[in-house]
Image (tube, rainbow, N blue to C red; front, side, top):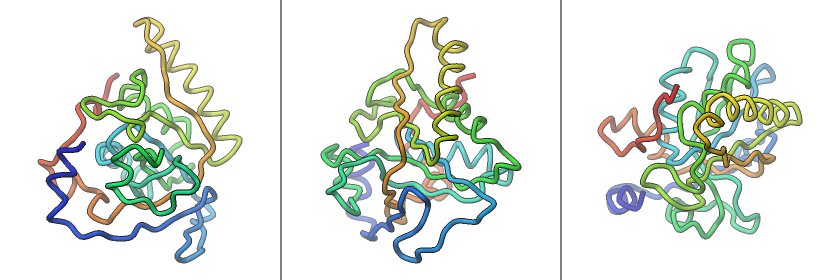
Length: 205
């Protein structure tokens, strides 16, 4: 992803990210999400591709809003920039945050789709992108999400990876503070269809 950084460095403005806590409340507005929706947070490599494939399949079908950003990092690093996260020093993962309607799409289905659309067996890497910022992770927002993520992970491991002799290395961890990425990253591949996309971000089954 360093090639992406060098291409963007002198053409795009710096915008200070917004921060949101694990319960989904923005530090800017302190207004919670809709009471009828839930939040799901996934990291699976370059966040452009993660957001893009979820929106292609679930926009209008349960996913209400998306944002790409940074989470799971060192608690002493607040509002990290893209440049900082790209160094790997902050510990943050590039991730997508989905607001979804559970009456239209279940959390279990979203977890299954997350696994279906990247390689969860490669540690701290997806395709040519390497580093802890590209790790595979599920950040859960409730005990119920944690239990569902664990169950779906076991099912996917047994069905899709045990036969190949591979092991899922995805971490499942409680959601921590969320920082929106700079504005130019949001829905980047819809705005720039020929932009970089990680080759693992496709339907694997």
